[in-house]
Length: 436
Image 1 (tube, rainbow, N blue to C red):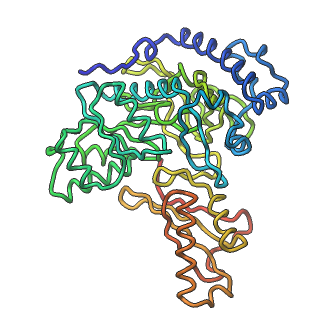
Image 2 (spheres, rainbow, N blue to C red):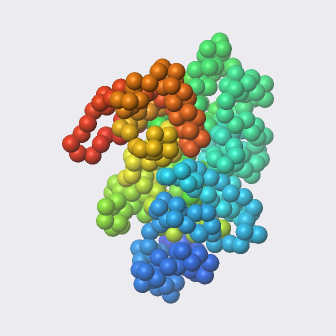
């Protein structure tokens, strides 16, 4: 069997030794943030905390939380902890109100991030003998650059394909003998369907493993992908705010994702009270970055709901595991790998309608692909407009949605009073996907 550890010393470190390492790095990081990030220093002062109060991980709970609202308020440079002259890259994802989340990286940050992705690739059996086909999006999205860098570190022959042009993907896969596939699970499923439609079977390709993330997926979907591509399918987790993919990764046991605890301290909190919950309890996942230089977030609330476990793993790693996210503590949706907030859609509607009409977001999964529809109720005056006027409005709305979200939605302008009313909170989102 191929080597399954990229950094065995860290990945199999005794828990007490890891706690010691985390404490040393946390103390240093809190001082770094206090000295260089006025925005966060003010939050600490408001809570009555100084770096002297943080002696180790046992004091982590004393620090204030950060949330997406803070990222929005501090945009773009307010949480930067290094001079811009020390930064070599940004990555970005959409924010709650159209403002994007912008994360900064020094070269050291990129090296550590790629190292985390190298651990994920090695955990699925990747070596310098492999051909790694990366079909995550490149550019501002973290998926492509992260796995691309990790593949380079491992020494794989790397195919930086990005997504799309699926028949060409399969041709390269066959011609160059790709053995590891990295992409979203829905795109992996589509590759499997296209392979079949082209008249091929898994025996015609050399894939052995896939690393899939950036969107929710079920165990049933995992089994479908494994069957259609003849591989073992592994999960990976990350978020732009902390670095990107590689915050945690799945091993051959496939019972949760190991968190790279030498870089990220994980907590589970009650999303309503902020109270830290014991291991094994379901709650909101919180991360503290203890090695990142340019954009080190302390106690960042991910809004992902999951469970942490230190149950012994057959792979030999001692790194704590997190389950697949079981939902969100906010109203964010992940559609086709993209973060979508109803408030972003409201921004478009206010712009195009000069007021927010009644609307609903309908998300479903047909086969293994997400569908995304926005139903918007017209006023009586607008409904009486010509078909040509309504078609023009639909086209404009569609273009504006793409501009703010980066993905297409089916726009359905519906007649007045056709969207159900509620006596309580309006039902803005109907998610028909079965993701758990």
